[in-house]
Length: 325
Image (cartoon, rainbow, N blue to C red; front, side, top):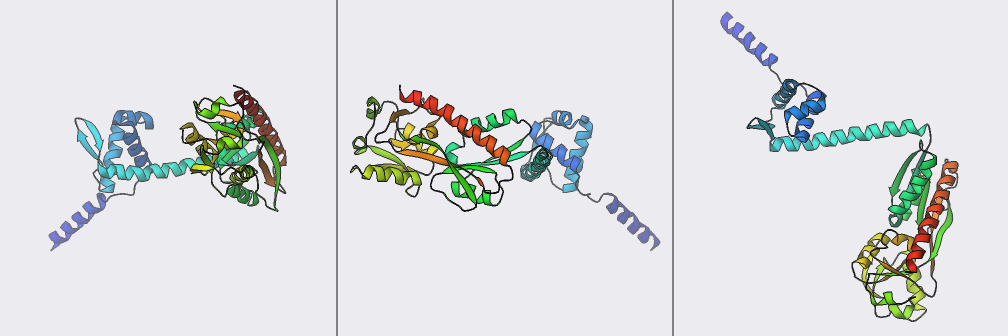
């Protein structure tokens, strides 16, 4: 009986000694390094530990999880299916950590100023990049964030102070937001290279009567402008395709689906893939720079607005030269 009791004590002691422990961050870092580097030696260099220490961390991780994470193949570790599933979770955790680090950096830099910008998808490429870089050139310590959103979302985020300034389509209104018309330009007719209309110096409504047309969504303010202007000349569009944003529309025109009428700045960057011609009669189109009525960053918003106008002028000049070719 005493022997049995002693044996029981020995067994309990042994189980307690080898009981799996909670995972620790060092094991997770080692596991992630091995998966991403492919070998224990390179993983050890990344984590700045010795190769035996790295092997020990991986062995402890397998023991503590009760999972076979690697197959040993010719001296190398090959991740198992369990390992890849675990890596997916680990990668999400580290992505969250990076987000926290970014938030810490943003909070730290907010002491020096910040500007949250919202821009409609039509200008989420080279245009907003040029305007923002111009702003930051004189204010390198200001923390900027740029969000590409639909016009109504931009207005909503301005009201809730998630944004400081926005660029939205015409026709949007809100009593808590101030709107300034910007970048008003005549629409141009765009077409793929080699299109018959490219031979014309100017495109007129009658030229579009039997031509496949790529249009914006019918509920878009600009689409309504175009339809009304052409209807006044007795022209009904032959719509071949509808796109919800200007850049997508331009891509389909460049691919040869049809022609379209668009604000020239929307086609910026596609001069080599699109032919542009002036359209008569003139249809003016513009956008709106918007901000909260009681903007908390009035100084930065004013400075950014100036850079936006400057970028619009510079790009417009290059687009006008393309019209003359």
